[in-house]
Image 1 (cartoon, one colour):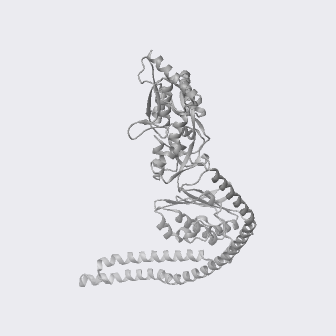
Image 2 (image 1 turned 90 degrees about the horizontal axis):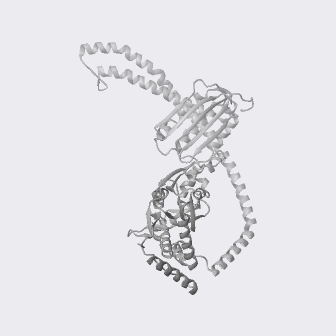
Image 3 (image 1 turned 60 degrees about the vertical axis):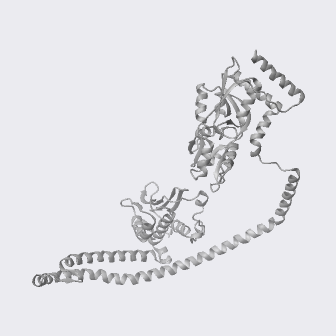
Length: 568
């Protein structure tokens, strides 16, 4: 009898409210009505402002208040249970929870559950302030994205064909904290909870940059067989909506997150400003076009001037290097010729010294005992001989590298790509040593010869190796140099791969443009790869680049075996 009295009382009160136009009411169901079945209402324990457990251990949020009001209106005996989302979903699927008070109605879920929506939700892509800017979720390809485990965003991205590394976490708060701390690349969370949590947690270095998908219906969900239970909540929701109580609860929790609309005066002022801006743009557009044309022509003239200066500088440098190499080569030749003579003279004199030591006892030479000196001197002479030969080899490489441009153009030598690669590695040995501890050289055996200018191809290889060294951030990162013969294309190929910072795709297509460089502040001129591409084109070859930002770059130099007579 108590149940009926309470139900009639609530119904009577609703009628009075409807008649009198009152917008708010509270009708609380008694918690332990005799004979009433307790309904378990499930939700996420940390999904503010929809549903969460606050600092005092109380269950609160928009969904919680809405469920309590529906229970009061409909005379339902409910118990709200908030747990981690993956766990509450598991209990819901097992039947331990009767109804979920907040679930997004995705196409996949509508086949499994019945929904009674009470609002809309949409997911946003959150990023740090210095993260790459993206406008669509398909651009998350090859990034590491943090999502709530078993959430609708997780399901959507996991089922997509995109190559995305998903980092599942328990709550939206965990996702935003990880992102703000510098871990991983992006986070995908519900928009309003994301804004609420980032503000509450003081995460000022992250922001929502793009929507993941269109708005989705969000609300109560039951198993397909529990239509009667869902009908009760739908009826209670309709009552709250008609009386304005749902709007009050909504404004309480989401009002502070909304952007205040402009006033009419503000809108009028904004329209006026926009009109003025449009008029100003129309007035100055012709002058702007002329200015761009002048700037473009000026840049072309500056580029031509820099090219002439660079060509003159390279010619002067070639003469200087050749002269210096010649001056170094003369004394090295003297040393190389005289070391064998000194060694032979010591061997002849050692018999006399041995006899002298036997008669006079031990003697000192250059402060060292004769026995030790007799062993040291041949080894020292051998080391000096090897060192002088190494200096001579480096000088010869420099002389070859510094051949004048006109002479180089005339050469059509039969060349070994492996020989040029080894010589180039010796030329930049110091730069390689200071950049990495891991140089891998994998040169194929007996590559076919090709015709061309050895000094010019060597110039290309040196430039590519130096670029690889400059791309490394850590000496533990590798540089891998590989050569092989491509039989189908009749090409010899040299690849230079680094594990450095990589190149953004927007820069990759412009690498060989004259004077285009991403290292302008570090003194780059933008001519190295442009000149290299020109040399390779003169040899009817191909220079291609493949790079991934943050993972490294691979450059492929392909040179044909058969060339036209006028190619060089």
